[in-house]
Structures are given as C-alpha cells and as structure tokens.
Length: 418
Image 1 (cartoon, helix red, strand yellow):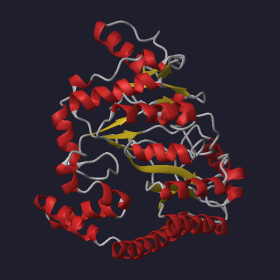
Image 2 (image 1 turned 60 degrees about the vertical axis):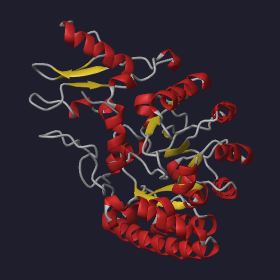
Image 3 (image 1 turned 180 degrees about the vertical axis):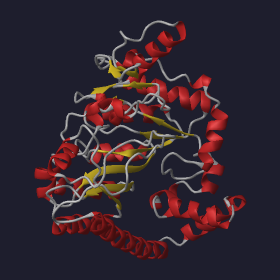
Image 4 (image 1 turned 90 degrees about the vertical axis):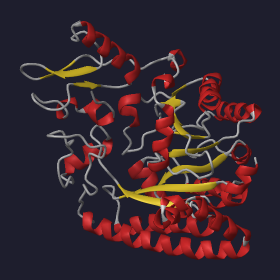
C-alpha cells in the first residue's frame, strides 16, 4: 500500500497487474488505511471505500475521494507501544532521520507533525495535493500531551517538528512554546522540514531558544524578489526573510535556508542572484544554505507548465517495475530555452564549493574567538572514538559547523554534569 502526493494524483502509475503495489491510499491515511485493512482482513468489498485505488481484472479503479479529517484532535496518539522503541533509537544513532545537534541522549529523537495543509500557492509544492489547502491543526493541549507521552514514557530528548506552517498562527505557536517551557522538559527541537517565515518575530524566536530550539530551517526558495512574486508565487518579501534570519542569529539559534533554482521563466542571471543572496545570508548571518533543483511533482502548477511547454527531460514515473524507491525523481528534469540540467549542475556544484570555503573561513575565525570550544571538539572526537576516526570527524562536522551555537551550551561534559 502506498500513498503521498504523487500517488494521490496519479494512482495508475503505481498500480499494475503484476506490480508490487496492491492499493493506493489517496489523501490522508489514518481513517482510510484503517478501513482498508479492516475490509481486507474480513473479506468485505473495498468498492465502497473512499480514497482507495486498486487494480481490477481490467484496469485501475479509483473510488471517490475521502473528505479531509476535520478534527485532528479526534485521532488517537500514535501507538508507540507497538513499536520496539529501544531498537528504533539504536538505529537512529546509525541512520538519523534529520540533522540533529548531538549530545548524550539526542539519538532518542522522534518526528512529529502538529498541523496539515497549506493555504499558499507555491508553484512547486505538493502539500495541498494530499493534505488540502485549508490549514488544520492539533490543539496545543493535544500536542503537549503527545510530546509528554514521548518524554515521560520513552525518554525522548529531541523532536523534529515536521510542519510546513508551524508559526502560521502566532498565538497558537506562542502557547505551544509556553507549554513546553512550563513543563521544564530537558529536550531540544528543530523544524527540519523547513517552515515559512510568516508570523515570526523577536519575541517568538527568543521563546523558541528558551524551549530548546537547536535550529530553524526556513523555505526562502529564491533570492530574487521578482522570481518569488511572479514565478514561485511564494508571497514572501526578501527583506522579511533577512530580518528573521538576523533575529535568529541574535537569539543564538542556528539557521538553515532552503533555496530552489531551475524554474521555467528563470534566467541564468536570476539563478545567480539567488546564489548570491544565499551566500550573503551565510556570510553575514551564518545561515547554512541548501540549494536544490526544481522538481515537477505531478499535480502541481510547475508540472503543468513543464508538460505544456515541453520542458520535461524525461517522464515523471515511479520506479515500480521490480522495486520501490524512496526517491522517485531524477535529480535533473527541466530544460528550458535558457538553461539545461548540465548548466544547473555546474552552477550548484560551484556554489557548494564556495559555501564549503566560506564555512571553513568562518569556522576558523569563530574558533579563534571561542578557544574553549576546541576542547569540546577534542572531547567530542573522544566521545565518538568507538565509531572510527572518519565517522567521529563527521559527527564533529555536523555538530560544529551546522550547530555552532550549541557547542558552547550543550557540550557532552556539560550534559553529563546534568
């Protein structure tokens, strides 16, 4: 059984007579999947189940769509008791799901999502395809109960909050931060999926820091205002983005900035402007940039534009012949009259080398100003010595270059003293 935005829009691409996929669940899973399993296990016909697509003797049949879940608080908390959590945390040491600042116990990490749907119109985003455009959310009490269960029963120490619009309702976000702080949990958290900057201000950012926020990841997408307004349709002002990144630096919260290049309508000059802005945020405010190529997810405006204008370099099809892969899209997929995949590869490759150089310079300068951190680095190497020298260096890299503020505040020996 598969789902997600691609499968929701194009279930027939995942289903075939002898393929590995039996059913596609379109939209939100909780209620549909429950009904599907119940029907399948009892021999009840699935023809009346909304949101389900399946292969018949003749072709793919898709039942009518299911309504979105109106009251998210009506959903029970995940059944963590059915998961071997100790094994889960062991594997998190080897295969961390997201970037996490490392301290003893930080491998006890869990991803949670507190809201769904997106009312914005970014040309490339597939969020609304299976979660809708109306923003729906769990109550603050529900979220705190969820986190409390994980902290109290499973000693979870780090949360990856996967929301796209965590701070869309500033009052709710403020209440959530207040609830976390009042409970006095010894936790850290991040927004590893990338959130919008809308609604954030100095007060909320300071409160985020005080509740254990180790880094914030922002979807800025472009460094050219005209591209944001007319091509991506982001509804974001670059001056607001830089202001929020600056406030995060003041609050000593590390920042990751996400950018996307290669949209139809972009020019090479516009792409270079985005790369310059990303380097500017790194130089001036320490925001680590991540640049990827635009990928046309079926069902999005970007896909329709590329298909209509003949910009797709190859079909957007899942690998369902003999196996399923988590990454179903080729890295390069769009070619316009102004650039091609090789041009983007060259630009991004050069940019990444420049970023590494900037980070190296900034790190050396920063270490001169914080000499006691050198001791923390040595202790961190020693702490990970059982992993081998190469893996220990990798841990230091992600702990230091990506999360430099935390080196002073959550060093291994300080955590042990706690």
